[in-house]
Amino acid sequence: MGRIITTLVLLFVLGQVPLYGQIGRYIALRSESSIRNHAEMYFERQAYSHAAKLYQKIIRVHPEDQEVKLRLGDSYRLMREPHNAAYWYGQVMKHDQTSSEHIFYYASVLCAIKKYQLAKFWYIEYLKAHPNDQRAIAAVRSLNNPQLLFDDRFEVKQLSIELPGAVFSPVIFDEGLVFVGEGNT
Image (cartoon, rainbow, N blue to C red):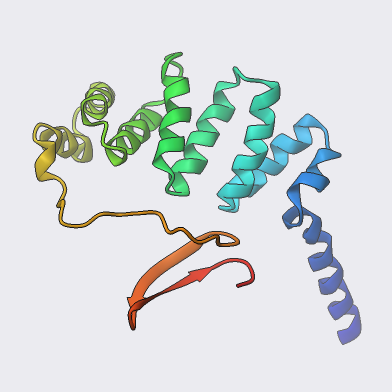
């Protein structure tokens, strides 16, 4: 009985491997709806970098797909890539076909890339639909004097090392940097 359960568990786990394996080769053989379904599955499982790759593939074929542009914006926002997120949200904002939630996200990523006046405009747009939202009210108030928002004593720079995947929780330790990441290092 134990062998049967072990075998079933092993088959289940091995059956999931192609979904997480080499995306390019596996997905290249799939239909467009399958690619979209896989992108959504990756997004729901918080594998945003994988989802973004698939959404990019869809957008090349359907450059006016506003829903995919929003998902790209969401993916990049959740991966902490505000420049990319702002680009994709901005593409949708041009067409005025978005939810107030995405307007808030767009304003937030605009703040992250220091486009304060544009961020303030979009926070005000968001407040038209949600006039009592304290986060947006505080953001607009802060954006009236953005130089007070940030301490310029520190400069954030991108590391010049190649890492195999996402990196989390960096900490300075013994004159070095320790972090948790995915992949083999």
